[in-house]
Length: 509
Image (cartoon, rainbow, N blue to C red; front, side):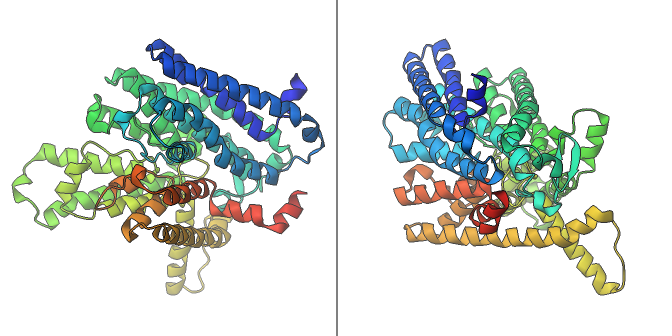
């Protein structure tokens, strides 16, 4: 039996995981006497487990003969994002009952890629379905953590190409040589054993904190899972319907640090780990964005002489400032939570197009090897350092810059690769926009949806534009295009180029 599980293909392992995950809404449905939903999830979980078992037996001989390399795991990961939502959507389709399969598939792709697009109205879905969507998003976040450290880091992809050094569990490994010495399956199992307990513990702590702050236990669990996975999935219509108020938003903001840098969960806990996080390049850049942009919105109230009667309203000023800080941080990590005071922040600033700020921070994205999407902070930092160095050379042409070997690597090769990814990201936005407009969508909707899908920040399309985009009202063609764009945004275009590169295939043979 041990050899059976050791030889299971990656996709089959994910099928077993999906079957086990279906027990979560099944048990909850049984507890709240929603027996119909509980039976659907339970029976579907049994069928998926049987399917996975049969596939495991069918692939045992092939598994022993196959060459275990990183490239095949990239292909397996891509196929998992494409086909796994079909299986994950079966119980949801049966429980909802009055919807079409394409809507459920879009929602499951959105959850698994941690995009969190609000496809269905919250009041339309039962609590068991809300819990299932959050569970799929939470597992998608864990999948991102594990595959980033076990597969992408050794290949110098997913943002690691900027430094060409992987950091796993607080230990630096130049050129990822130590990680690539082990087989990919062994690395996946090793990283899962290290990261999964941390991921679960952080989720449990945040859920307990939200529950103590007054949130309903189910909603506390869902919002905690959505925060750690940055899926942004909510069981309510927003924080306006939450009972925690600012306290809950503060708790969530504290845990969004794990989407800004991988050092927050790979360096352990303690003063030394806190010091490494505080000195991390990605955290410093994120703090700069979170401080500067809300300050701009806050100060514009006086610069524009907007609503002078509110100048003495200290409470309104502080709530508006917090609303902008929390919302900017949430969209920077591509979570997509909107503060209950964001409307007040928009009114306070008097800026009619304040949603464009959220578009910008969502494109920047969070940290490398985290659940956040977008360009990633490390790539933006590399471009900034290269630009600052070039400006310095205009003034001092013969100067020699310091910052050590790693700093020089970031300014030179790292900035070059970051610029390539930036161009690929823009081209991807243009291609998705062209496809959406060809499918009949207007320009603004196509732009917002393309950025939301490729940055894995689904709520962006409903918040940043002049008019909110309703995903459910889109046609079938835009939904298929968006599903593909979400998968591309989750895996990143450089990974696709690596998969399609003949040289990469030969190097992995």
